[in-house]
Image (tube, rainbow, N blue to C red; front, side, top):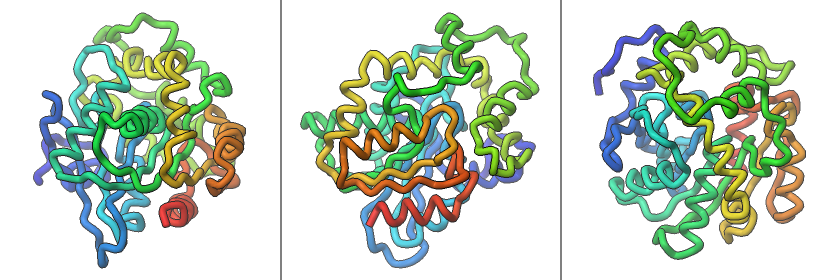
Length: 299
C-alpha cells in the first residue's frame, strides 16, 4: 500500500507501506499480516507491543520470526499508526480489537509473543480463552519485559508524573519536540546498549503521530487497571495451559528481572532466558539474541 503520511523517518515510511489499515471495532487500526519467507512450518504468531511505542519495535526481528511462520502485528488503539481517540483506554478495548483482527483474518489457532503492556493485553486474552468466551487455540507463548507483577515495578519519574495527572488529554500547547519522551525511552535501555538517536526519533514520530503524545496520561492508565485486576491478568499468564517461555532483558530498570524469576517459580517448566546487558527493549537492543531466544521458545 502507499504511505498515508509524509514521514521524517524512512524506516517508519517503509513500515507503514508494508501494512494495511483496517477498521476494527470502529477504529482505524494499523495491521500487518506477514507471510512466511520460506515454507510454513509453524502456526501463525501474534505479536502484542507495549507502552508507549508500537509494533514498529519488532521490525528488526520480523524477518527472522517470519522465516517459517505467518506473523501478525497491529498497533493498538492510541499507539503508533492506529487511531488515537480522546477516550478512556482499557485492556478490554484493546483485547476486543485484537479479537476482531484475528476474526477478520480467519485465524483461530496461533502462538503469542507479548511485550510490556502487551503482556497485560495478552493476559486478558488468555483469561477470555480459558473461560471459554473466546473460541480460539493459543498454542504456545513467549512473554518478555513487562510489569506482570506490578508491585515489583520500578516506575520511572515520567510514568509517575503521567499517573498523577488527570485521565484526560493534554492541551495542544504541550511540548512537542519529543526531548522528554526520547530521554525517558533511552533510560529504559541497558547502559551497555548503544542507543541509536534515529531509533528514538522514529519512536517519537510514531508516539506523537495524530497527537498521541497528548494522550499519554490516558493510555498509561493500563498500570492502574493492572493493579486492580492483577489476579486476572497475571493469574492467566501463570496458569494458562499453553506452553510458556520467558525471555527477559536483565538490565530492565522498570520491569526488573526479578519478575521473570518470580514467573519462572510459578511455572518452573517454562524455560527462562535472561539476556545479559539488555534493557527493556531487547528486540531493539539485541535483535539477533532476542529472535534466537524467542524462536527457541516457540518450538
